[in-house]
Length: 234
Picture 1 (cartoon, rainbow, N blue to C red):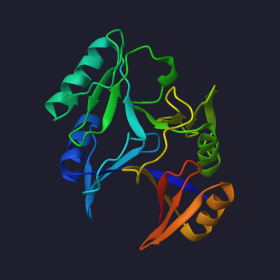
Picture 2 (cartoon, one colour; picture 1 turned 90 degrees about the vertical axis):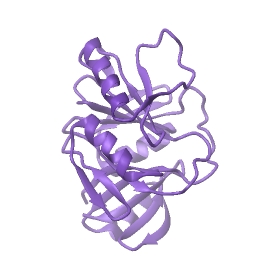
Picture 3 (cartoon, rainbow, N blue to C red; picture 1 turned 30 degrees about the vertical axis):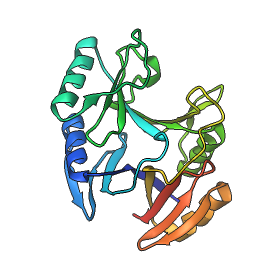
Picture 4 (cartoon, rainbow, N blue to C red; picture 1 turned 180 degrees about the vertical axis):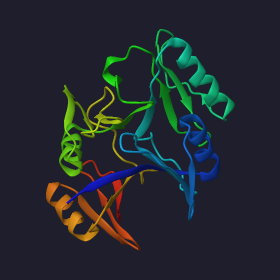
């Protein structure tokens, strides 16, 4: 049964403002939704959804986004555009010799503008990667859940990508296995759609997911690393 990753969802204080930032940065349109907004993707680019929430951030974020660059000038243009749209520089302990630039959007969500010549992200498009703090096992789970091929597996890091190409999704304990323990509900999660959420939820449970709750229009589950995700009818 077809399962589609519609968007990566972020709980933020002001969904309208953060959605406007990303729509401007990615040159996409904003679709207003109940309680939030969707910056829709396409066949090869992942969508981003922002939901207004007063949930507090507890512990480190479990994922962030990588944008690609075609040249140093292009990288600088992206940084300048992000700052003009309301982003800011973010210090995460990166060294002075790092070639990527770390920023935060108006909701505090981290993004990295990757330097040109990065072969790993070659051909992915502008939104090159959703990178997650996660185990190898969870990468293999999402490979099977989405039916996307595993395009990277080295040490503890894994990455999958749509057969059509585009945005990669990767999991890495970010240099400190095991992954950081969860201390609360994630403010970032995957939103997936399918024709039959009930049957698809059963398949995902058989792959290692945990069913958490029935939603008004779908099912909430958690992957093998206990990251929540939502499943809705397409």
